[in-house]
Amino acid sequence: MSTPANETLSVVVERDLAYPPEKVWRALTHPHLIEEWLMKNDFKPTVDHRFNFRGDWGAVDCQVVAVEPNKTLSYTWAAMGLESVVTWSLTPTSEGTRLRMEQIGFRPDQQQAYQGAKFGWQKFFGNLEQVLSRET
Amino acid sequence: MPSTNDILFKALSDPTRRALFERLCREGEQTVGALTARAKISQPAVSKHLGILREAGLVRDRHEGRQTHYAVHIGALSPLIDWTNQMTRFWESRFDQLEDLLKRMDQ
Image (cartoon, rainbow over all chains, first blue to last red; front, top):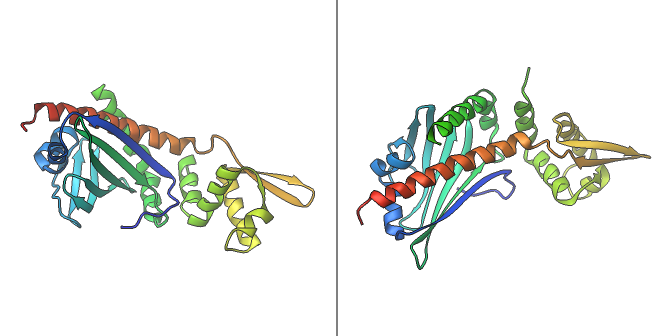
């Protein structure tokens, strides 16, 4: 999938982890491990595989875009009509791994996202806020 | 009645409008003529797009003689910036949980 140059929404979270890329990769790609830190899911590390994340507040529809073992993982992330792409990058460091997550949303072809966001946006973040406040 | 977010989404869902808006963000106030000179569409089309951005509260216009100047309305994007803030918090908390998991995992 190409990434148009004029996106308007982007979230980046980056962290240095004291574990090798192979181990981080397992946590990112094994469904039972993903569930422990992110959400219940039926993920498979296969390009074009469609899957869901399921949380208390609803489901996220996803499709695998790119898989490069121990290096890159990318999937679409559509929640309540807002479509985005989540890309994980793993870079080996002397201490372990630098893990970067980039979420890019609102591509030019996203009329549909707008339609969904129209009724889903507020609810999605209302629910997300609840989840976050429970976790802190 | 549409919410503020609805109007923002609709205004920014069009790539041409988004490109105009981003140019104003990057380069500051400009006349319709200056914006048209570098757009691939006619001046009436540029004016129409700017009108939609103005109605959404994303830009402001200022008339000076025969020229209309457009500038970004600071703060208009705060609902969207809010989205990035909230998603950032979401992922930060998931990173914490990921680190906890990695601690517990075998090699």
